[in-house]
Length: 64
Image (cartoon, rainbow, N blue to C red; front, side, top):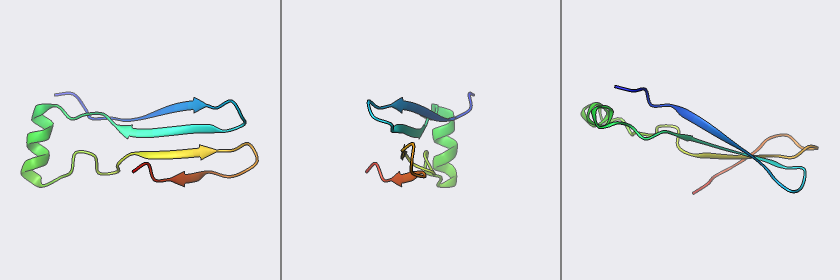
């Protein structure tokens, strides 16, 4: 059984911004069964989009 991981994609923009997209990999069938048995959501943390500007601090936004 492989491990479910959290991954970050780093996307530079044409301006001075950098976009960080953070998500969780898909669970394998065995992991899904274990999660279901314990009532655990497969992606507890959820997706996160963060935009960083060269002159500002981190600004988190919902990606819903």
